[in-house]
Image (cartoon, rainbow, N blue to C red):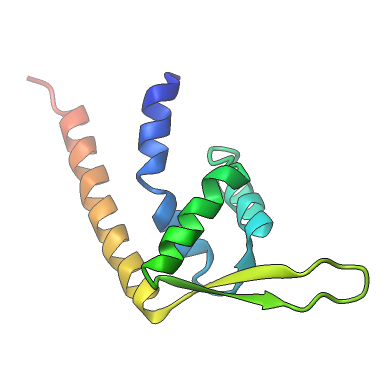
Length: 113
């Protein structure tokens, strides 16, 4: 696959996918990376340098909030992210837009002149 097109298409849905993963439980960065990889069948294999700017932007927009968790024995402190009520509303809106775009693209691709 052409990397250019793949990167562009993936970039457009990353905010939505990160918000979705935070919908039911708080998670830390590496956990998000792993879940995204597993749940997408290795389609979305993010690096930390890709994920953290997304999380920081979502936090600036008040769509997620973060808190540090005190480590248990022999663990490191972790910063957990959780979706806010505003983030839940935004996720629903983003998903609706994404569905319209995907359905419209499918219609165009199926039609023959």
